[in-house]
Image (cartoon, rainbow, N blue to C red; front, side, top):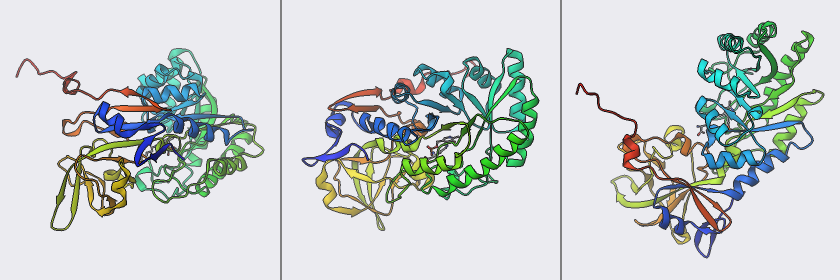
Amino acid sequence: MHHFHYVNGALCCEGVRIEDIADRVGTPFYLYSHATLTRHFNAFDQAFDGIDRLVCYSAKANSSQAILTLFARLGSGLDIVSGGELFRGLKADFDPAKIVYSGVGKTAAEIDSALEHGICMLNVESRSELELINQRATLMGCRAPIAVRVNPDVDPKTHPYISTGLKKNKFGLTSQAALDVYRDAHRMAHIDVKGIDCHIGSQITEAGPFRDALLRLRGLIDQLAREKIAIRVVDVGGGLGITYRDEQPPHPKAYADAIREGLAGLDVRLVLEPGRVIVGNAGVLVTRVLYRKEGDHKSFMVVDAGMNDLIRPSLYDAHHDVWPVSEAAGQRPVRADIVGPICETGDFLSRDREVPDAPPGDLLAVMSAGAYGFTMASNYCSRLRLPEVMVRNDAFDIIRKRQTYDDLIAGESVPDFL
Ligand code: LLP
């Protein structure tokens, strides 16, 4: 459920015509609906009513300051994976006690910063990381709250690049290895064993894999309890999928039921790290058709956004619906590839399917682009990063300016010896 719809043939975000925004900010741009963001966060959070839980929105899905600030104000915690995300989160006023830190490659400086700010917990992904955390906490004279990330070896049935809970993936530790790490951690004076963690993948569209993962975690929690190592927090990660085309992921309520079932009888606090399910369908990428081009085998629609702006189609062959901003063009679908201006064959937003027959000058909305859109964008081919706009009711605000050519070379220098 989102707030992008046609009114008198014009695509609107809440109460604002997208064409009016394009007139003001130019194209391409990312556009987010405040009502959708708020609704998705609240629906997800409320699905867990009755459970002691902390929803930690996963910053990597979309870490723009306005969006982080909105979630902080809605009471969210934050799931981070870098010092940069910690910086952003603190600037957006997240309570550090609601921040969890995952990732296989935390540096000493990042660990120090997390400990200094008193975050909720570090999710440890290896024995050597645990040793480093203990060392840093010893130097700082504090106890580092940690969870061990378990790799439950469950197939999330999603794209291989975004599946993380299989033995062959780099993430977490097997149950046996985790048990050994817990035993060591328990003996370390500067480690506070607080929880257990897992994250099995992203864009998961069935409840089964979540259920299976939790069952494996349960076995380990019970074993730890027998060894007098008490687990107080269970972090089940993120990964709940959304509808891009015709997927039917479980509703947050059904997802919550599966987790409720898995936690039955435990006296723990639940932590969740949703990203895509909150922001994915709350954002679109608006682009303008530059040219139409007939090849021998194919028709092309060349637009002003490219793979550097939205890399998901190129990287995962991901499907994003494309809607015409002027509804009429959608009534005459044509078969054409929608391609960007970049010098790579992989530079496409949609391929081998029917799309609205939009003439040059028309606007298109690439749907479901709120998650892993802007955050994965780059300056490839020295293209400028896009502006981002947020709509609330019938007003909009530019939450990030379009880069300028000067921004492009800021921070660079030419050595004297040249
Ligand atoms: N927690 C951890 C530890 C994660 O690694 C991730 C995502 C999340 C939470 C949030 O997962 P979500 O709820 O958004 O599925 N770039 C890819 C997705 C990569 C996901 C990486 N980790 C894409 O565009 O599909």
